[in-house]
Length: 266
Length: 260
Ligand SMILES: Nc1ncnc2c1ncn2[C@@H]1O[C@H](COP(=O)(O)OP(=O)(O)OP(=O)(O)O)[C@@H](O)[C@H]1O
Ligand SMILES: [Mg+2]
Image (cartoon, each protein chain N blue to C red):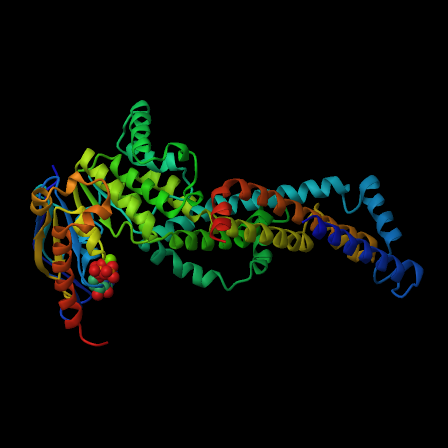
């Protein structure tokens, strides 16, 4: 379960007659357990899209629904990983991950088991009793991903989750996310500025136009990945060297560049 | 750190020496205007052993401390939740803010006559005035503390499906707590200021009463004893609050240090 559907979605900020049109005519379906990345120029409305699914914001026209139900409020079945982590600094790593399970009424023993498993999976075992500020950015984002994954959500929403990390950590996290997503597939909506990241991680990449944001085209990466057997490579740089990868990446780059060129001078 | 302590001790010792020199040795200041160290110590023995202004020093201290504690606790028990509520609910803020705008410009001490008129010279009037004075910083800082919690933190809480009570105790309260403690410190200072003022105006016991009687008796040594006692109590209670704060905000101290 976890089908996301945008139907004729528009979002205008401010008064409806002269407000900022952030999104226009967005139609996008994300299948159950599909990984879709959204790329687009800065300010085109990517974050807005994600917030509509999270239930932090609501469309001005059209509907956003998950499994056929219109989104009306935030909830743990649509877990969010924030760019700035948004951990609770007054709680330990363990307590940060546990709080969502407590809210769901999961019994203590089961909580311990599930948190133990996710800590293992994310390489966080020895940090359970640390506070977030004692960890590096990469480690904090692991905690944030663990906090989301442990809820066993239908949908994972990630807004530039690796944007605040340095290049090396970023690569490690990308590989880790692929590993996690393979082991425990979820519907993922993933926003990024980095085209390579999108192509490496996603089944499909949606390219948006500059503001007011529309969906310009949707690239099917999954079929290429399967045909060219990307998954047989262990490391990200090996995949990135493949001709099929480079081809896909360059196409998206061009498409994005057109949008930037079309941007009026400020 | 140790060097700083040492310098502090030296400074205080030098001041006492200067005081001794100016009053007892050189007699630059007349004892009727400012007491010498021996006068002060004599006054201290007087109030400690024989009693003065209706009681011994311990009794006065106990009396003042008790009132400050009561007033302070009443103020924060009412002020902090109100501030949290105003920070969280725009409707509550809209409702309560106008009342604040009217009451805030009135200095808390200006309430003393009215409080005495209502409640007499006993405990009630003083607790009321302390409450007026200490309430405001508690409310305002708790309010600002909630407003300072960043949006992603609140959204994370919503996403995690936090029930209301747990949201207040595990997100709102800890998130606002650095500012809440700032408010508590200001409230405590305000409590002492108002208590002494209220006791100066009318009281049967307390350090303010000692100061008032000593002034009428033209007894500078006793005035200084009263002032020093208030200073030590104010410092001590602030210190105590600081210890509580350090424990409660351990995560924050370290977070601040980590940020540099
Ligand atoms: N709460 C808001 N109020 C008013 N305008 C908003 C609000 N949120 C977003 N906008 C506007 O909507 C447009 C899209 O913003 P959004 O944050 O979705 O873009 P983005 O694609 O995520 O950009 P970036 O790549 O820089 O993160 C921008 O013009 C932005 O100024
Ligand atoms: Mg964004």
